[in-house]
Image (cartoon, rainbow, N blue to C red):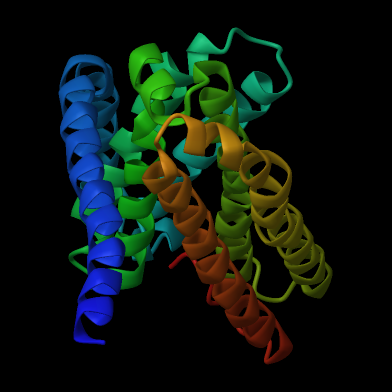
Length: 269
Protein backbone atom coordinates (compact mmCIF):
# COMPACT_ATOMS: atom_id res chain seq x y z
CA UNK A 1 0.00 0.00 0.00
CA UNK A 2 2.87 2.32 0.86
CA UNK A 3 4.48 1.61 -2.53
CA UNK A 4 1.20 2.47 -4.25
CA UNK A 5 1.01 5.78 -2.39
CA UNK A 6 4.62 6.63 -3.23
CA UNK A 7 4.05 5.65 -6.83
CA UNK A 8 1.00 7.88 -7.02
CA UNK A 9 2.91 10.79 -5.56
CA UNK A 10 5.72 10.26 -8.06
CA UNK A 11 3.25 10.30 -10.95
CA UNK A 12 1.89 13.61 -9.67
CA UNK A 13 5.19 15.26 -8.78
CA UNK A 14 7.07 14.41 -11.98
CA UNK A 15 4.65 16.21 -14.38
CA UNK A 16 4.50 19.18 -12.01
CA UNK A 17 8.31 19.35 -11.88
CA UNK A 18 8.52 19.15 -15.68
CA UNK A 19 5.91 21.92 -15.99
CA UNK A 20 7.80 24.10 -13.48
CA UNK A 21 11.08 23.55 -15.30
CA UNK A 22 9.43 24.47 -18.61
CA UNK A 23 7.87 27.56 -17.01
CA UNK A 24 11.25 28.77 -15.73
CA UNK A 25 12.88 28.16 -19.12
CA UNK A 26 10.05 30.02 -20.86
CA UNK A 27 10.46 33.03 -18.58
CA UNK A 28 14.21 33.14 -19.23
CA UNK A 29 13.46 33.04 -22.95
CA UNK A 30 10.92 35.83 -22.51
CA UNK A 31 13.36 38.00 -20.54
CA UNK A 32 15.92 37.69 -23.34
CA UNK A 33 13.41 38.85 -25.95
CA UNK A 34 12.13 41.66 -23.72
CA UNK A 35 15.68 42.98 -23.48
CA UNK A 36 16.14 42.84 -27.25
CA UNK A 37 12.69 43.81 -28.54
CA UNK A 38 10.54 45.46 -25.87
CA UNK A 39 12.83 47.59 -23.70
CA UNK A 40 14.54 49.57 -26.50
CA UNK A 41 11.13 50.48 -27.98
CA UNK A 42 9.72 51.23 -24.53
CA UNK A 43 12.40 53.71 -23.42
CA UNK A 44 11.23 56.73 -25.50
CA UNK A 45 7.67 56.21 -24.25
CA UNK A 46 8.91 55.82 -20.67
CA UNK A 47 10.84 59.09 -20.96
CA UNK A 48 7.71 60.76 -22.36
CA UNK A 49 5.50 59.56 -19.49
CA UNK A 50 8.08 60.46 -16.85
CA UNK A 51 8.19 64.00 -18.29
CA UNK A 52 4.37 64.21 -18.40
CA UNK A 53 4.05 62.88 -14.84
CA UNK A 54 6.74 65.27 -13.57
CA UNK A 55 5.39 68.35 -15.38
CA UNK A 56 1.84 67.56 -14.24
CA UNK A 57 3.00 67.24 -10.65
CA UNK A 58 5.16 70.37 -10.62
CA UNK A 59 3.48 72.80 -13.01
CA UNK A 60 -0.28 72.51 -12.49
CA UNK A 61 -1.23 75.52 -10.32
CA UNK A 62 -2.55 74.87 -6.84
CA UNK A 63 -6.31 75.32 -6.72
CA UNK A 64 -6.90 73.79 -10.15
CA UNK A 65 -8.95 70.61 -10.19
CA UNK A 66 -6.14 68.61 -11.80
CA UNK A 67 -3.72 69.66 -9.05
CA UNK A 68 -5.36 67.18 -6.64
CA UNK A 69 -4.63 64.27 -8.98
CA UNK A 70 -1.94 65.18 -11.53
CA UNK A 71 -1.38 61.56 -12.64
CA UNK A 72 -4.78 61.68 -14.38
CA UNK A 73 -3.13 63.56 -17.28
CA UNK A 74 -0.73 60.73 -18.17
CA UNK A 75 -3.48 58.18 -17.50
CA UNK A 76 -5.83 59.89 -19.94
CA UNK A 77 -3.14 60.22 -22.63
CA UNK A 78 -2.35 56.52 -22.28
CA UNK A 79 -6.00 55.47 -22.15
CA UNK A 80 -6.95 57.34 -25.33
CA UNK A 81 -3.83 56.41 -27.32
CA UNK A 82 -3.72 52.71 -26.41
CA UNK A 83 -7.48 52.35 -26.97
CA UNK A 84 -7.14 53.80 -30.48
CA UNK A 85 -4.17 51.57 -31.33
CA UNK A 86 -5.87 48.45 -29.91
CA UNK A 87 -9.07 49.23 -31.83
CA UNK A 88 -7.24 49.85 -35.13
CA UNK A 89 -5.19 46.65 -34.76
CA UNK A 90 -8.24 44.58 -33.75
CA UNK A 91 -10.22 45.85 -36.74
CA UNK A 92 -7.31 45.25 -39.11
CA UNK A 93 -7.06 48.92 -40.04
CA UNK A 94 -3.31 48.92 -39.40
CA UNK A 95 -0.70 46.19 -39.67
CA UNK A 96 -0.50 43.78 -36.75
CA UNK A 97 3.16 44.75 -36.21
CA UNK A 98 1.89 48.07 -34.84
CA UNK A 99 0.97 46.25 -31.68
CA UNK A 100 4.40 44.90 -30.75
CA UNK A 101 6.24 47.94 -32.14
CA UNK A 102 4.04 50.71 -30.72
CA UNK A 103 1.11 49.51 -28.59
CA UNK A 104 2.93 47.14 -26.25
CA UNK A 105 5.97 49.41 -25.61
CA UNK A 106 3.61 52.35 -25.02
CA UNK A 107 1.47 50.60 -22.43
CA UNK A 108 4.45 48.95 -20.71
CA UNK A 109 6.07 52.37 -20.29
CA UNK A 110 2.89 53.91 -18.90
CA UNK A 111 2.30 51.10 -16.41
CA UNK A 112 5.86 51.44 -15.12
CA UNK A 113 5.54 55.21 -14.76
CA UNK A 114 2.16 54.90 -13.04
CA UNK A 115 3.59 52.44 -10.52
CA UNK A 116 6.46 54.85 -9.78
CA UNK A 117 4.41 58.06 -9.59
CA UNK A 118 1.08 56.83 -8.20
CA UNK A 119 0.64 53.20 -7.14
CA UNK A 120 3.71 52.78 -4.94
CA UNK A 121 3.67 56.28 -3.33
CA UNK A 122 -0.05 55.90 -2.60
CA UNK A 123 0.44 52.27 -1.47
CA UNK A 124 -2.15 51.05 -3.99
CA UNK A 125 -0.95 47.45 -3.99
CA UNK A 126 -3.98 46.16 -5.91
CA UNK A 127 -3.07 48.53 -8.74
CA UNK A 128 0.54 47.31 -8.59
CA UNK A 129 -0.76 43.75 -8.99
CA UNK A 130 -2.99 44.89 -11.88
CA UNK A 131 -0.12 46.67 -13.69
CA UNK A 132 2.33 43.80 -13.13
CA UNK A 133 -0.21 41.25 -14.40
CA UNK A 134 -0.86 43.35 -17.51
CA UNK A 135 2.83 43.79 -18.35
CA UNK A 136 3.75 40.18 -17.61
CA UNK A 137 0.90 38.52 -19.48
CA UNK A 138 1.23 40.68 -22.59
CA UNK A 139 5.03 40.78 -22.82
CA UNK A 140 4.94 37.30 -24.35
CA UNK A 141 4.05 38.87 -27.70
CA UNK A 142 6.87 41.45 -27.64
CA UNK A 143 8.42 39.77 -30.70
CA UNK A 144 7.35 37.40 -33.46
CA UNK A 145 9.64 34.70 -32.08
CA UNK A 146 8.37 35.09 -28.51
CA UNK A 147 4.73 35.05 -29.62
CA UNK A 148 5.30 31.94 -31.74
CA UNK A 149 7.16 30.25 -28.87
CA UNK A 150 4.53 30.93 -26.24
CA UNK A 151 1.26 30.48 -28.13
CA UNK A 152 2.34 28.64 -31.26
CA UNK A 153 0.66 31.21 -33.49
CA UNK A 154 2.26 34.67 -33.44
CA UNK A 155 -0.65 36.29 -35.29
CA UNK A 156 -3.23 34.89 -32.87
CA UNK A 157 -1.15 35.89 -29.83
CA UNK A 158 -0.66 39.50 -30.92
CA UNK A 159 -4.31 39.82 -31.93
CA UNK A 160 -5.44 38.48 -28.54
CA UNK A 161 -3.16 40.96 -26.77
CA UNK A 162 -4.61 43.88 -28.76
CA UNK A 163 -8.17 42.71 -28.12
CA UNK A 164 -7.43 42.58 -24.40
CA UNK A 165 -6.43 46.23 -24.41
CA UNK A 166 -9.86 47.27 -25.61
CA UNK A 167 -10.46 47.14 -21.85
CA UNK A 168 -8.68 50.51 -21.64
CA UNK A 169 -11.56 52.26 -23.45
CA UNK A 170 -13.48 52.96 -20.19
CA UNK A 171 -10.43 54.54 -18.49
CA UNK A 172 -10.58 57.97 -20.22
CA UNK A 173 -14.34 57.98 -19.55
CA UNK A 174 -13.63 57.25 -15.88
CA UNK A 175 -11.07 60.06 -15.75
CA UNK A 176 -13.57 62.44 -17.35
CA UNK A 177 -16.09 61.45 -14.66
CA UNK A 178 -13.53 62.27 -11.99
CA UNK A 179 -13.03 65.72 -13.51
CA UNK A 180 -16.74 66.46 -14.14
CA UNK A 181 -17.73 65.58 -10.57
CA UNK A 182 -15.18 68.08 -9.25
CA UNK A 183 -15.25 70.88 -11.82
CA UNK A 184 -19.03 70.89 -12.45
CA UNK A 185 -20.35 70.03 -9.01
CA UNK A 186 -23.86 71.41 -9.57
CA UNK A 187 -24.53 69.90 -13.03
CA UNK A 188 -26.89 67.01 -12.27
CA UNK A 189 -27.38 66.13 -15.95
CA UNK A 190 -23.65 66.02 -16.63
CA UNK A 191 -23.14 63.78 -13.61
CA UNK A 192 -25.94 61.41 -14.69
CA UNK A 193 -24.65 61.21 -18.28
CA UNK A 194 -21.04 60.53 -17.34
CA UNK A 195 -22.07 58.00 -14.68
CA UNK A 196 -24.10 56.08 -17.26
CA UNK A 197 -21.24 56.21 -19.78
CA UNK A 198 -18.84 54.86 -17.17
CA UNK A 199 -21.03 51.95 -16.13
CA UNK A 200 -21.96 50.94 -19.70
CA UNK A 201 -18.41 51.18 -21.08
CA UNK A 202 -17.01 49.32 -18.06
CA UNK A 203 -19.51 46.48 -18.41
CA UNK A 204 -18.94 46.10 -22.17
CA UNK A 205 -15.17 46.42 -22.28
CA UNK A 206 -14.34 44.74 -18.97
CA UNK A 207 -17.07 42.50 -17.59
CA UNK A 208 -18.19 41.14 -20.96
CA UNK A 209 -14.89 41.33 -22.85
CA UNK A 210 -12.68 39.13 -20.67
CA UNK A 211 -15.02 36.11 -20.35
CA UNK A 212 -15.59 36.32 -24.12
CA UNK A 213 -11.86 36.29 -24.80
CA UNK A 214 -11.37 33.28 -22.52
CA UNK A 215 -14.34 31.34 -23.94
CA UNK A 216 -14.08 32.16 -27.63
CA UNK A 217 -10.33 32.74 -28.11
CA UNK A 218 -8.31 30.96 -25.41
CA UNK A 219 -10.18 27.78 -24.45
CA UNK A 220 -10.57 26.57 -28.08
CA UNK A 221 -6.76 26.57 -28.37
CA UNK A 222 -6.18 24.18 -25.48
CA UNK A 223 -5.33 21.32 -27.85
CA UNK A 224 -2.80 23.50 -29.70
CA UNK A 225 -1.13 24.50 -26.42
CA UNK A 226 -1.06 20.85 -25.30
CA UNK A 227 0.45 19.69 -28.61
CA UNK A 228 3.16 22.34 -28.29
CA UNK A 229 3.87 21.34 -24.68
CA UNK A 230 2.82 24.79 -23.47
CA UNK A 231 -0.02 24.00 -21.07
CA UNK A 232 1.77 26.16 -18.47
CA UNK A 233 1.35 29.18 -20.75
CA UNK A 234 -2.27 28.21 -21.43
CA UNK A 235 -2.98 28.13 -17.69
CA UNK A 236 -1.09 31.40 -17.11
CA UNK A 237 -3.07 33.07 -19.88
CA UNK A 238 -6.38 32.04 -18.31
CA UNK A 239 -5.28 33.03 -14.81
CA UNK A 240 -4.22 36.48 -16.07
CA UNK A 241 -7.57 37.11 -17.73
CA UNK A 242 -9.48 35.83 -14.68
CA UNK A 243 -7.47 38.07 -12.33
CA UNK A 244 -8.16 41.20 -14.38
CA UNK A 245 -11.83 40.22 -14.68
CA UNK A 246 -12.19 39.77 -10.91
CA UNK A 247 -10.50 43.10 -10.21
CA UNK A 248 -12.69 44.78 -12.84
CA UNK A 249 -15.84 43.24 -11.32
CA UNK A 250 -14.84 44.45 -7.87
CA UNK A 251 -14.20 47.95 -9.24
CA UNK A 252 -17.59 47.92 -10.99
CA UNK A 253 -19.31 47.18 -7.68
CA UNK A 254 -17.31 50.00 -6.10
CA UNK A 255 -18.33 52.37 -8.91
CA UNK A 256 -22.03 51.53 -8.64
CA UNK A 257 -21.92 51.85 -4.86
CA UNK A 258 -20.30 55.28 -5.20
CA UNK A 259 -22.90 56.42 -7.74
CA UNK A 260 -25.81 55.31 -5.55
CA UNK A 261 -24.59 57.53 -2.70
CA UNK A 262 -23.83 60.43 -5.08
CA UNK A 263 -20.13 60.07 -4.51
CA UNK A 264 -17.39 61.20 -6.88
CA UNK A 265 -14.64 58.63 -6.21
CA UNK A 266 -13.68 56.47 -9.19
CA UNK A 267 -12.33 52.89 -9.00
CA UNK A 268 -9.11 53.90 -10.81
CA UNK A 269 -8.04 56.43 -8.15
